[in-house]
Each structure stands twice: as structure tokens, then as C-alpha cells.
Length: 443
Image (cartoon, rainbow, N blue to C red; front, top):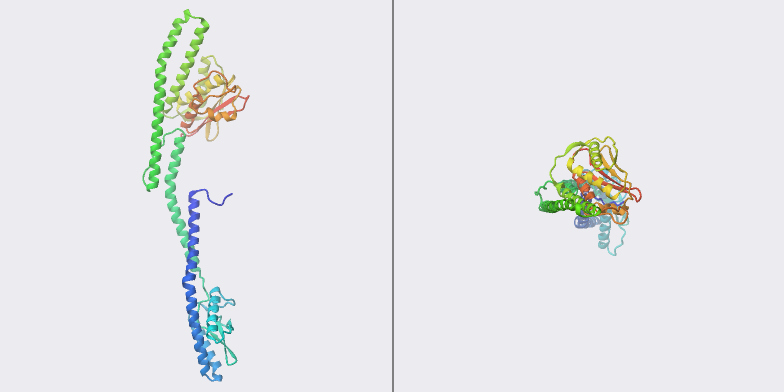
């Protein structure tokens, strides 16, 4: 599992946190290179000069007064340290801090350079008060000189950490606020895209805000309008062509009936069947074109819808078995759903085999109505393709009278218009089950 966040918000927050930490590290390096190191060098020069002056003072004093002079000097340094802002308790450490070590090394180098021959024998220690003391050898005697606050022993305080944490939190808070205002229009685009993919026309997106977000909204609105216009033109074309075909089909049907007495009965029956098939195909075109018609969604019982479809099939001499599961009433576009169900039943009779079943059922979130046949079934890799308009099953899996290939496409569009889905289940030899799944609340 990758540690890199998948969401844009998580990635931005992680990036900003990394930038804050990197900027603080860069600030530490700059302070060390441009402030602390020059300060160490400056203070080391001062201490080296003071030590040279103290040695000169020891030179002019009688040997008996030198120890008292050093004690007085150390006492004065301790008193100055007690008056400092930093408590002595914070300085009582046995080990040198990193800055103290650099300071001691710098002073030692300067003292060695000042001494003839550079003995390199400078020694340091902490006295009883926790202050740094330097060993000065003079006349065969070692004197320990306490240095009064020449350099702070604390190079790090909690203020730096607090400032770093506060800066990081402020940066993350700002990033969260900015990302929230970016995510809101993006979430609206996602919701509108889902509505568009389900066959519904989304409300136009607001085109305000930053130029980039406004450009995305304008582009999406233009795309949605173009798709809606193309859909209307296609539906208008299908409706016009189908309507115009009805007139010559009616004339052909009338001609066959008139000529029935003068042609062979089998030929007349075949011509009549061909006309009926063409009329059914034209009817599917009209159904496909009418799916965009505005129809109010009203609560309806899927059990009642299944009974009505079975009765309509019985009028044509077809028996449809019912397995009703007491499905609750759901908000539906009744005419569109009935057309979808009729297409599924017709598809089962045309391409499957008896018996044909109508089932209903429901769970907490959805209600469903299913058409099942007992034909040869459909291969799994064919199911998705059959959802597309004008797609028909190939081979012998669903052999029979060819149609327009719009039955499943109509059911798919109707299901999406209701906020639901068309589920297809089949294995070769067990028939096809086409289930319209609808939400129990209006979408």
C-alpha cells in the first residue's frame, strides 16, 4: 500500500508540510552559517584578546598576588553570570554543547597562534558554578580563568520548535481552506458528470470563481448542451424516419390483404409477417426516440406492472409466469418503464425460449423487476456489448428472428433515467436474466 495519498487534498497537505519542514531546515542552515559561525569567530577573538590581557596583568603582578587576582577575576565573572537572564541551573552541564565545542576550538586555535611556537595545550573545564574555565599556565603555575558569559551554552530553545509547529499548522490550515474551495466546484463537476452518464440532463454548473475553475465549468456546460442537442437531433431523426415509414407499411399491409385472394396463402402469410416485423422495428425506433419525453415520476407497484405485462402477453397467446415478491411502490416514469419491460419480454420470446418468467423483489435501497427465459443463454463477453444500441447477439447463443437491436438499449436508458441500472446475468445453457434495478426513493 502506497504512503502517497490518493486525494488531492491529502497530497497538497503532505506537500505543504514537506515544504514547511524543508524551509525550516534551510533557515537553520542559514542561521548557522550566517549568524552563529560569525558570532563564534567574533567572540573567540574577543576571548583570545582578554586572555592575552590577563596574562599581561599576571606578568606585572608579584607572584604572591597572582592567585588573589585570578580569584577576584573569577568571582567577578560568577557575579556577572548570576545577573544574566539565563538561570545558572540551565548551564550546569558536564558536556559541552555543539556551539561550545566550536567556540572552544576557535579560542584554542587563536591562543596557539598567539603563543610562540603554538603549543596547542589550551584546556577547558566547568567550574563549580557550571561556567567554562580556561587553563592559563604562567610561571610554572596553572591558573583557571572563568569566562563571564562569553557565549551562551544554550543554542536551542522551545521557541524555535513552537514557531516551526505554528508555521506548519498555519500553512496546513491555509492549504485546507484553499483546497476546500477548490474541491467544492470539482465535486459539483463530478456529480453533474454522474448525472450525465446516467442519461439525465444535469443543472448548469456555476461559472464563477477562479478562472481555471470557471473554464472547467463553462467547458462542461458546453459539452452537456452539445450532447443534449445531439441527443435531441438523433431522437428527432429516428422519430421522423419511423413516422414516415409507418405510412408505406400501412399501405403494404392493406395491399397484402387485398391481394390475399390472388396469391398463395403461404406467400401472403409470409408477407404479412414481414410487414409486422418491420412495424415492430419501427415501433422500437419510436420508443428509443421517445425516451427523452418529459414524464412525471409517480409511485407505482412493480407487481402491478408485472401483472399488466403478463396480461398483455396473454392477449397475444403467450403465457408469462409470475413470481411476485411483494415489491413496494417506487417512483417511476410509468410509460417509459412499461416500454422497457415490454422490450425485455419481447426480447425473451424472440431470442430465448419458454418458459418466460417475470419476477419482482426488493431490498432496503432498491426494488427490481426481472425477465428470465430458458434459452441457450449468452456468453459473458457478449453481455456488455448487447447493451449498446443496434447490437445483436451473434452465433447460435441467441438465435432467432433478427430485430433492430434496441430492446436492451431501451431498457438500459430507462433504468439510468430512473437512477438505477440494467443487470444482465447469463451462462450458456441457462438462459438470460435481465433485471431492472430501481432506487426506492426518487433520484
